[in-house]
Image 1 (cartoon, one colour):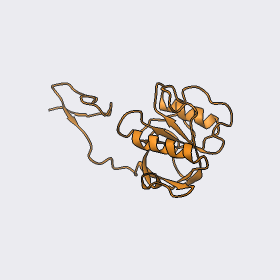
Image 2 (cartoon, one colour):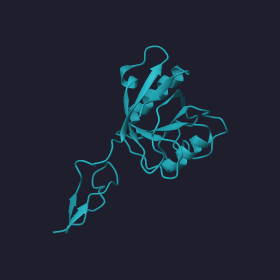
Image 3 (cartoon, one colour):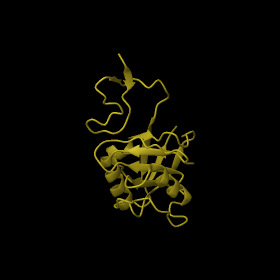
Image 4 (tube, helix red, strand yellow):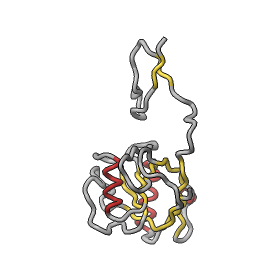
Length: 172
């Protein structure tokens, strides 16, 4: 009997790390580590929709830890609606002290986070570009990064565009 780690190669069918017929893939029901999910609380302006007032966000792995509360303005990436969002450097000051909202796409999560950080972001929210959530691997990054579902990203993008002074808090 050989038990192998199921792995984590994707949310689709047959995307486990080990599919060999001579092994039994085993997955953990508990990870035994500190929580990876944080809450993003959109704080205004005005009456925030309940779905944005308290959103669960998956903390990125292998990158900067989330060790202090973040409370600042939100800003949507200017290229959010493209498949190459955040894959190229932004002009200096694009995010200037804000929490950046970027969209998943054709480059790695670390590239996206580093580009947003270099343009002044203090944290990055990465929205999935397909249904479901994501846990971004963001090794080599210096600001906290969090994964959102596609639905959360779309609704948050629309809220920020309609409310340019939208702010959020991400408590520890």
